[in-house]
Length: 251
Ligand SMILES: Nc1ncnc2c1ncn2[C@@H]1O[C@H](COP(=O)(O)OP(=O)(O)OP(=O)(O)O)[C@@H](O)[C@H]1O
Image (cartoon, rainbow, N blue to C red; front, side, top):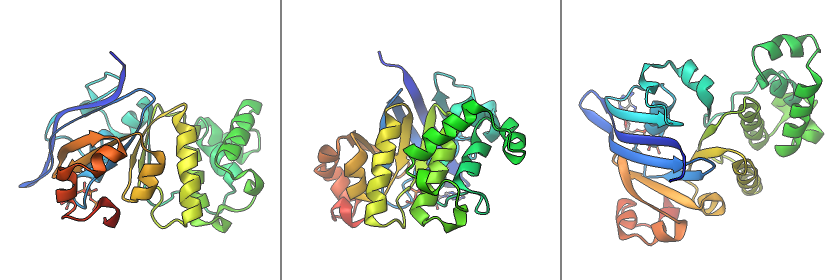
């Protein structure tokens, strides 16, 4: 049996009387890139919130690398176990350069001191140089981050997450507000990272989902409606019905 990086078991989250996640069972293998889609309010963000410890499950479990005891851990402790999350809006230090942002993310908090005093180790300098190339910002490495486009800031933040060597990357709507060209480059970046990371991507842009996804999970009313390849889910009558009789591209 293949090793699971992430598994949820009958995961339920209720906010007062409202059930945002309802007995959700989900699992993915180590090294997998999984895209999670679903109509507005399906529970996608809550799903990420409960994995990262921001929201506590009302019942059920989240297991990360086989560890079912996440419930007792703080958000910070869960992050340190190896889960990195990319929020929709980039959170980079705008007055620092991409190189400095990445240096700060490598091996915190030691790197804060090292990068402030210009003494980053050769190993961390090499890691940063490699990351700058991976995220396509090597030519803009030493310009202030506020001069970057929205897409470039998104890539920088993805690079900052990768600098912390997470085992699992959670990426929430990475192409919202990006140009078509930036969207395509983001897809290439995620596919490149997927060669060495396990990644969950939440996304609405169906063309982008088709570009990156081999396996798609459709959430609806807090539970898994179906899973499969993009071709399988796009022709699944349940998915078509959930998207109110429209094709998922219209979402
Ligand atoms: N803290 C909260 N208190 C009450 N209800 C909440 C809370 N957080 C989320 N919800 C509700 O839970 C449901 C699922 O929300 P969630 O944000 O997870 O959906 P989503 O699939 O990410 O939607 P979208 O695509 O619109 O971002 C929504 O109806 C939302 O209003």
